[in-house]
Image (cartoon, rainbow, N blue to C red; front, side):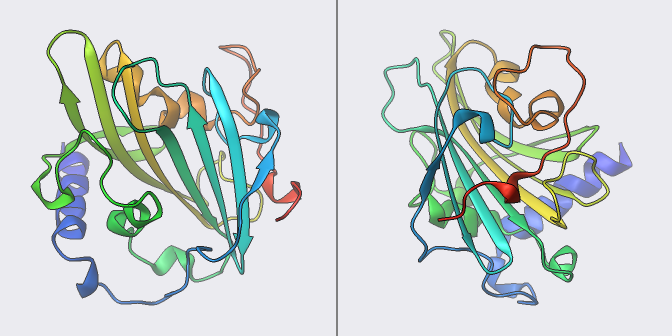
Length: 211
């Protein structure tokens, strides 16, 4: 319980004011580098119905954007955004979710502005995950989820110190189903075609073709 409260408090502080955090490593986003399409098997997560995998690298940061199938009538993309940082001092930086939202042109539909969202917190084998939920109360659930994992996790990409993750996912199903693409089972697999229950595979994404 203490860990969950601590995680919730830390996330609340992040949501309040990104600008107040020390900018130890300012340029962490390869925003000016074009994406290169990758094979689906190069995805850093294992998720059903991956449509497209895009990747780009700038300096110590490799970014992967994974587009998922959207079975709903809601506009917008179901997407997983992953940022792996190999710099030695990346572990000292604070997780800033609003910077990740800048990559997707702001808080995605159907969610409100970031500072108006109410976040839930859960701790699992990868650490703390925070997410907001939107539902039509008729079987359609959307989540906007964030998490950071560090080099102590066996699922990190090769050479990375931290990996920041963001998920926008709308499904005709449960809230837990919507969260699956950044859950422990998904992040533990490198290939989308790996069967459920198979042994985890260590990821080596930085061997993939660079843009």
